[in-house]
Image (cartoon, rainbow, N blue to C red; front, side):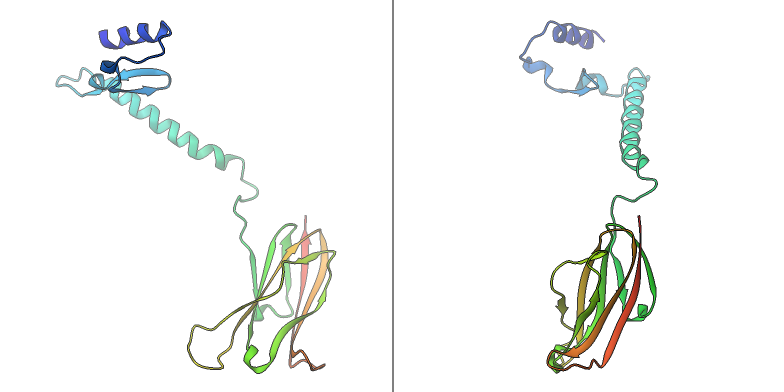
Length: 185
């Protein structure tokens, strides 16, 4: 303990430079401990100090992991998008303001057909740009892929979203897709 006490007195004097013989140590909660003091000797001389340090570090780590999660019991920090597919056609979809809706519909643009938005209430839903086409995982010519639409919910209320699968030069779709979106605060 002489080394530790001498070092603490040296630190209290306000010296701004560290002597080279004192560098080999660690700083734990504002106290500089010489590395030689942390060795476990036969007879258990330094074992209590080492255990105290290990328990303190583990407790501090657990506290650091617990604190960020303590305030997020009601809403998770990481919001996942609500994914909607053709099997959800005609359904009521419940979401919260600020959620992202990802609509994934089978499409084959090589035939001239594509999904087009027919009804979108921009008071409640906002389109996040043009739809994206994801090609199929096969090399087969003419195979269909997936058309992906992304929307963000803006305010509480009910809104319908209607899409039609049609060619741009035709007026009658061959398929339609519709959902009701219930947006909660």
